[in-house]
Amino acid sequence: MFDVIVIGGGVIGGAVLRELTKYKISVCMLEKENDVCMGQSKANSGIVHAGFDAAEGSLKAKFNVAGNKMMPAYAEELGVKYVNNGSLVVAFSQEDLKTLQVLKARGETNGVTDMEIISKEELRALEPHISENALGALHAKTGGIVCPYGLTIAAIGNAMDNGAKLYTDFEVVDMQKQDGVFTLTAKDGRTEQAKLVINCAGLGSGKIAALAGDSDIVVKGRRGEYILLDRESGDFVSHTLFFTPTQKGKGILVTQTADNNILLGPTSEEVETGNTDTTADGLAFVIQKVNAMVNNPPLYNTITSFTGVRAYSTRHDFILEESKHVAGLLHCAGIESPGLTSAPAIAKYVVEELVSKHIDLQKNENFQGKRKAEYFFKQLSVEEQNALIRKDPSYGRIVCRCEQITEGEIVRAIRENPPAKNIDAVKRRTRAGMGRCQGGFCQPFVAELIAKQQGIPFEQVTKNGKGSEIVVGVSK
Image: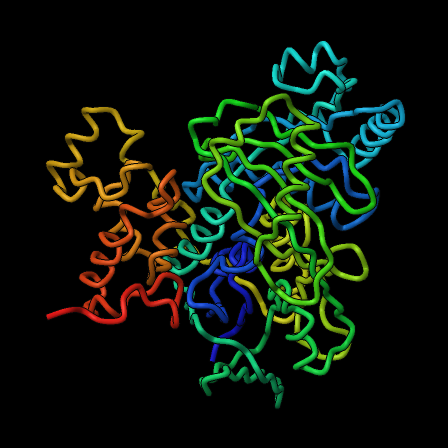
């Protein structure tokens, strides 16, 4: 039996799991998919928000600003790319300019520093491709970008390195509490027990609460469609560009990613399910708005499009509390934007303020918070590359030509915590398959390495879990 079970392997669950391992308690994570970071954390903009957008006094505002301050050190500890590129909220009307003043004042109330409203001339000097219709912008210098799946995977991996357990393909379908102990049952019949349960299930957090008899958590979803451009266009913009926000959210953005791609989107559409199909209308809307933001966007360098579903609470704020109906069931629900930014601050609060009410937390002196940086072979100097190849010749064999990812990097991803079990899992950890050809060249080689490292037949290798096998048989 564990002291604490965390349900949901997203960026919030990962941050909470890692924070728990700083103490002398037994913890595990239950994830319904075949890998971590398979929900909204996977299809995330990766924006580290400054904190001017959330309403004064809200949990969003509190944890956004705290998380923004924590993020540089948090990412560095986990060996994840973080760039302090700054955000620009662009005004296109006199009404927008008035809204910028409101945002700036709100940000100052929330505790955001280093903000200023700049003229259209100053804006153009920062972003030469900005539309001539832009009238000015709010420049938030503490805004940044981070790799969302890298951050999630690294936090969970670091927690596992510090003793946490991870059980994937564990879809919780029943939760019972008896004599102070929760028993959680998976769809396949497996069970795990704990004294405390932390609900970080994202879009499924309402369902998890209901399993325990708590109907207070109502979570809905918004679909967001994105377009991703090749790294060849990575310098088209240097800041994160936002339209002036509306009631529906921050709207379409144009931004670099931490890996120097250009990301466009997302749309915002209310949905009842987790459907992640892209649509012609949705992508057309993204293109229309991007053309209004910048001149001549390099859409010819589009390499893929995708959709994420973002969970939000009907309270329209984060839900960070113990269930009013089931003692020991802690909710981290409705964590929409700026959830990624808020993750390290949320985790600290949940453990220090909520978990501590039930468990006497004693520091784990053996906790090791540093995780080996996810260096990429291509970013090393020639001398460093040669030294690494002499130590391990597999780093001298390029598997993914587009992203210049080596066999050594892929093998490392398959072996280290949390292990990559399929092709998409390798892709999220190494970028093999994220380039212009989208895995058209390297996929068979990645599959071969997975089969070899896992000791399974080639035909059992999947793209993203059971039912997505790459081949249906091997000819003799």
